[in-house]
Image 1 (tube, one colour):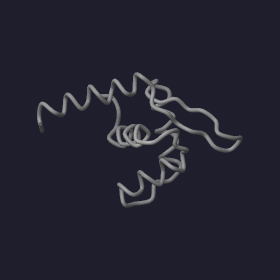
Image 2 (cartoon, one colour):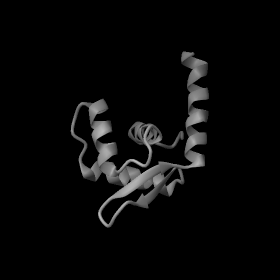
Image 3 (cartoon, helix red, strand yellow):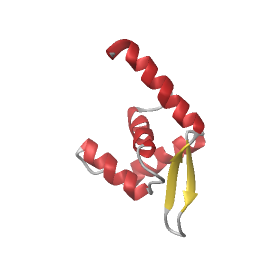
Image 4 (cartoon, one colour):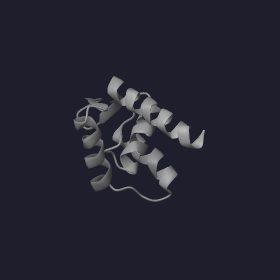
Length: 90
């Protein structure tokens, strides 16, 4: 997870907190945290990066809507990140 941007890590956390969220669900949730609009040109390339790294899996709900789920590697990356952070901030 050390090669992810902060935005990509935040996307990973959001995906973990939902059951098969769509890109729109992720966008709405991340916008509430960032307090600003996140455009598609920022969101989807970063989601694709997480998919390409094997941390997230992308599936299709229908012809227009994809969903995202955390993979075992993604879950492990979060666990390792949390353990690393805990040594500094408790």
